[in-house]
Image 1 (cartoon, helix red, strand yellow):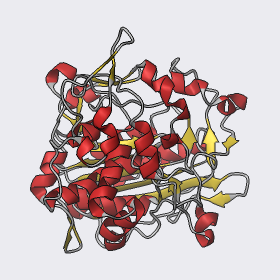
Image 2 (image 1 turned 180 degrees about the horizontal axis):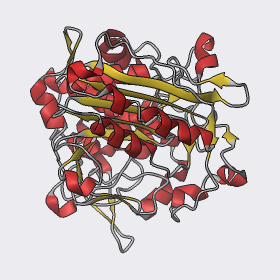
Image 3 (image 1 turned 45 degrees about the vertical axis):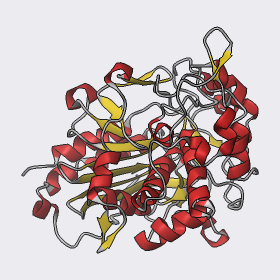
Length: 418
């Protein structure tokens, strides 16, 4: 039987922040059921309100084969939950006056100066306007992803250096500029490698490697002790194993065809070390994925955002910068958002994160302005600035289309009683 292991540092009870302890207890059986059914090997969840952790628990195993339990110090591959961190880091440089959001990307990555646009008829044309730094963060740049089926450009990326963890970020981004854009900048919303390019902009402006900048400006000061582009040798025993979910009936989206390994059985262990290595920090630094971290580390980052840019007396960003980041930047004509056939109703997109603009359409409890994102291995976070709620869900499962994060959200909001 999987049992929760309380890990919350809260010194006061949930009732002090308007939450019901009895209702929060509903989270445990709901999350435990996913483990008992074999959907996930193990799960970690955290809920905080007004800076107080009111729920923190761990269920099942981080490594089934070794019998290692899911614990507070379990390390996860964050995949696309890297993006909000890197976007936040770039905005720290904006506050220093080091760049403007409307600057052309080519000002910082000259390789993009000659980029073309692949038109629907197959011809190449000049961009009608330059790709701007803002476009990178909002996924309106014209860039795409190799696993999407929205454009022929996606197919071209299969051999791109940005997908090879042994290639340094600068070389990989310069290589990406040799491919045409999938559409005119600003004319569409398409999930993309844009934040990988934004990460290179950080390096160019700061004069530091991405990992060094993140450690110096965010991870170190925030106390995110296990977040990095590597896992030290003495911490690899805490890394959660990765599992696959090929048993599910899945939509016919292109990226699944690239991972035949997932088709070998029910929730089997899979090896992702070739594409997500634990030991290549010199080269494996990306903006769109690549970070490792614990749930408690990510809570530190998310709580700083929820606090308006401050945590434990240290300010990282101003409230006004965060308001800009978590406003919708996607024009109404480009809504609703859709990710390769998956609709995101009720959401717009800010600078690195989704943003709720119509709570009813999202199909889940929340507030206007709620923001967050997810990772490919079923990691998820959200911040509700109105209710001052932060939620974290972590497991390691590729090709999973269950929605435990939505269950967690519903249970968390159901426990608000003030």
